[in-house]
Length: 362
Length: 118
Picture 1: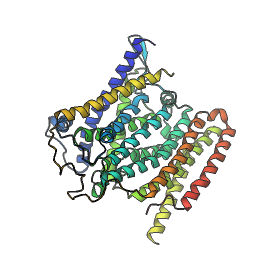
Picture 2: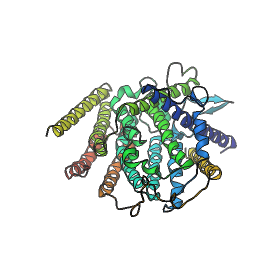
Picture 3: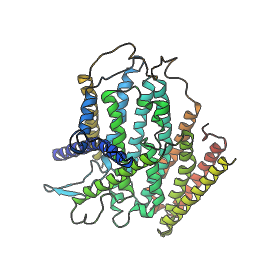
Picture 4: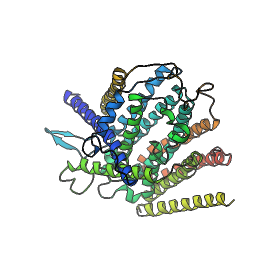
């Protein structure tokens, strides 16, 4: 082990963290602007030209707010919960490759913090840790709303983790590797979304539920639970929960891009490796816009239906899709995979429609 | 390969530092005007009745138990997916049998109403 390597890792970690922090700040502005446009408003436009200083103003305001702990709260856990939530959200991104390896000062540098050979497993493991932060926040607040929000949130997150894990399995099967850099490299000619559109769709739906975004934002349904698990939080601790949510949005978009939408591949990347991060950023921004669009369009799902969707629809469908992918690879007829998967998705939606109609006209 | 985890450790340390610094900055610059009423749990302006942490519906525990069962299944699928091209037909049949056994439990839980929320 040499010092150059240590410096390289520290620099890459710092850059990643700065990108995520800046990304969080400007994602809030991006979301507010996009939502405003969809609702025929203008959005924040007072702080700086086109409101570009709005995140700075918000941040400064939050720093000067009172850090507040309820008297009946569990002091230590109340302090730790936001940290346990935000650190995994920042750390998941370590395995995402932002571009092909490049040469800097004669060193071959990979544009990811750590190229683990169990990358996908790492993502699943770290993503599960933030559930602890949320359930602890709910419990430590000693508040009924926070408790219910925390419980709902954790139940929802673990339910959708099954479908999410199975969507990972389809990508692993197609790439024949758990290493994210190899999964991206395998998509040089064909993106996995073409081979496995249903797997990609399941991944996108499950990640929406995983980051507690609308229409799956039950845990913070403000009409019934005020703000859910972070009801009692104020100031920077509240900001950390907010940061965790938005950084997770960025990270799952980057993961979706790497697993199904070709990662850093795009025209001209072979000749100019520096184009890789640009394509990656464009894909992430487009996927983030999708998330914001969904929030603006769809109403919130009722909690019982949300759990049914996760357990009774997405989980069996994802299992079927994983086996269809395996079958296609075994028979070496990859064109069968999208065909059969779409058929399975169509059959599932037919069954769901029938079940709903039966309930309505019972 | 294990050396890569040092990079992750560095990242975790830096992320923890940033999060801690943010909270401490808030503690440092924020006003501290504590009152007894402010320290009560928030309940839309009403005086809270009873403790904040109560008994939870058993369904949450049920979901957590089912999750552990099926999550282990997913974790088994991950190495299977990596080794699938070497395993071939044997791998597919083997995993189908494994999943079939678990699916019996899944449909039992479904029939028993463990997946229903009133």
